Each structure stands twice: as C-alpha cells, then as structure tokens.
Length: 149
Image (spheres, rainbow, N blue to C red):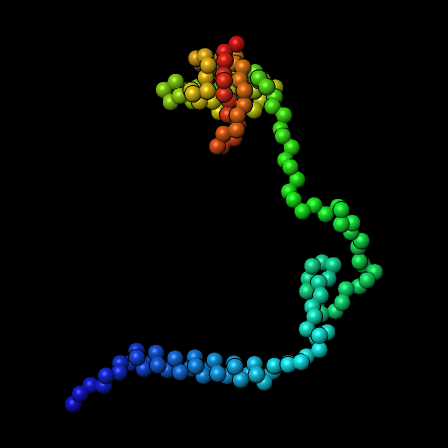
C-alpha cells in the first residue's frame, strides 16, 4: 500500500490558498454592491477645518482669516552670520602632553573649549594664560591658534 503524496503541511497550505481566494471574491462582490456610480459631487467632497482636521461639513465663513499673499515666504530665510569675537583670552585648565590635547577656560564667559596640539602656536602647560581663536569642530567649538601671553 502506497502513502499519500500530500503531506499535512501541503493540505493546510492549499486550504489557506482557497480561503484567501474566496475572501478576495467576497470583497470584490461587496465593492460592486456598494459602489456609488454617479454619486453627487457634494457627497464626495471633504473639507479641512480651522484646526487642520478633515470634516464633511463646510467651514464656517466667520472664522475665515484673510492672508496677504506677499507675506508668504516660500524659501528658507538666510541664517544670520555669527559675529567672530576675534582673539579671546583664557587660562589652560588641563593639558596632557603625551596625548596632545587639553582644555582652556575663557576668562570672560567661563566656557571650556577643547584644544589640540595641532592648534598650538606656542607650547602650553596647565595654568598658563593664553590668547586663542575659536573654530567650529565636530563636537563643538575648538580653540585654535593658541599663543602664550
């Protein structure tokens, strides 16, 4: 006696395929039955209220706002250039010669700025008073062109 060529898994897959096909046909028939061919234009319109939500009622004309077309900006406004403060003065709070980096505290704003050995003009040590300029780096502002006072 030979075994059946169809396994349980094949039977289940075939049942799912048939069920899916029947569901698809049922949905198609439902769409055909509920189709509104030649429906009124007013029934198909949708409105947006003053809060930006969709609604089927027309907006209230008393809440309408008059907007001058000349005031509408289509482009992005230009970013104002930041003023370059020039040379700043500060004090070296930390500097590691072996690693080649450190931090400078600005004497006016008390902000800490990163300094790398590549941005040095003179050799510096902790506690030295220095003059420096700022440059935008990857993680914030960096002190460059650092000179000892």
